[in-house]
Image (cartoon, rainbow, N blue to C red; front, side, top):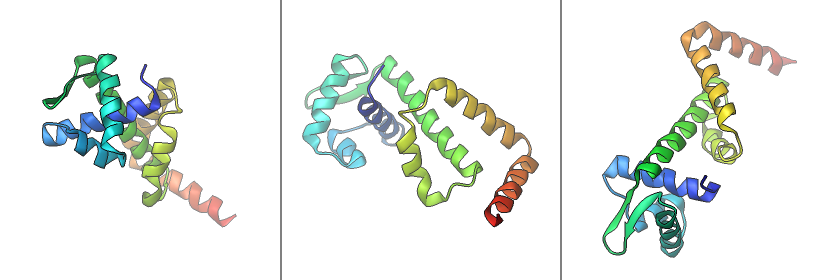
Length: 140
């Protein structure tokens, strides 16, 4: 399994390729707010560990293994953001909260959160009931 740092890179590379059709070292560095030299080192490590294929001066592409993990990481991130919105976390706090927990939560917990999100999305009244509880608790 990749480290949390490797996950961040794989996720960002996956998103860039989905959005632009490619991911350059400079794009990755900008997206992650790191130096291009750091990106190059990580890309070389990801290449060595078969998460992507990298040829110097030619670019990079995620391997089948890297794509599969990238999809899972993006799913995890988007699911956690959706969950935070459902439970009423302030929009300006969601991204940092998700970034803070996404590497520290098991895939079993992600599956259960997915179940909970599905549960709430099946019936708007469930979300409304949750909001009523939150409002009541805020008054106490």
